[in-house]
View 1 (tube, rainbow, N blue to C red):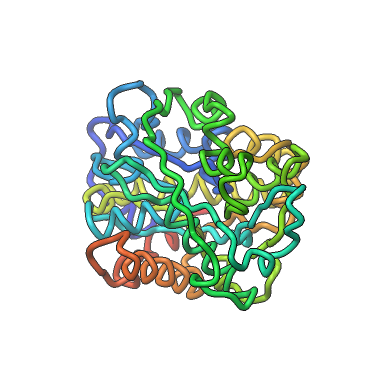
View 2 (cartoon, rainbow, N blue to C red):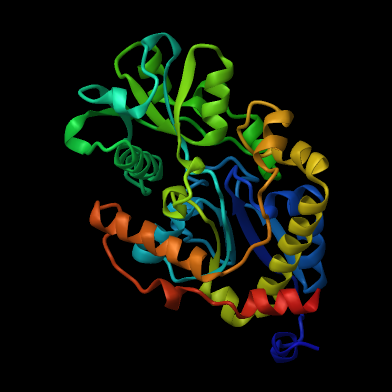
Length: 352
């Protein structure tokens, strides 16, 4: 038996465990769809509950703050970093590298073919009116814009960055698992207010994720003028990724076998995805915003879903944290390496 399992006190009653996962390429999403997350947690006396199971006022808030007992969060690292810096004591127990650095999109009829053509023009930057959480969408956009300008030999002063405000007053919806919630999201909500601004000519370009960019391109109204994932410089791919798997420190310290069980499910799902790309694309299409199963399949072709805590992944978190601190998205600094706890991942890998 493993050290972690041996140190665990006998289970006398089921521990209720909450989880939330972003609509991204994380193995946790597939572990849920295959029933493996529930299966692994049940083995260690834990009962699983999805954060959005009940449509209650501000039920979504722990997705960002991590302020909920026994919570696992997997997905974009910006909310996870904000939660650690300014809200909640958590442990970083896994990271999933994403090779997609994001895209810059313009109107197809604009004549704009590359980022260099944006000199003197307007680039949309989302601005949330919701004061209860980190403005992760804006942070993602700002970092992506600055990276795109850098590779084009431009700087912030060469363009007009235009705030596009959003009250964010729409419900997140409810469901028993992520696929049910994301399927209920209105299409215009998934595409965003910046898209409307671009379509109406109030701005000339926007930065967005790969899935969203492909959906916009397929409409025929927009074109992709930059793909930050095409460069050999891996730092250009760091933007709300690598995806971070975090857990409340209290749960990790009191019930470490639950953390190991979660990671076992994620590793099992990652191995299955890596060996069954087409079948995995069908499942992942349910929990992401790619325009089709075919587009999802193409996007994950060279994607490694196995979570790890490699030096590059940890360094990438440091890049994002510094950006968030320097640009005022987080108030407090912290040591990224001290946030990382690799013992759970190591135990999960050994147990499999």
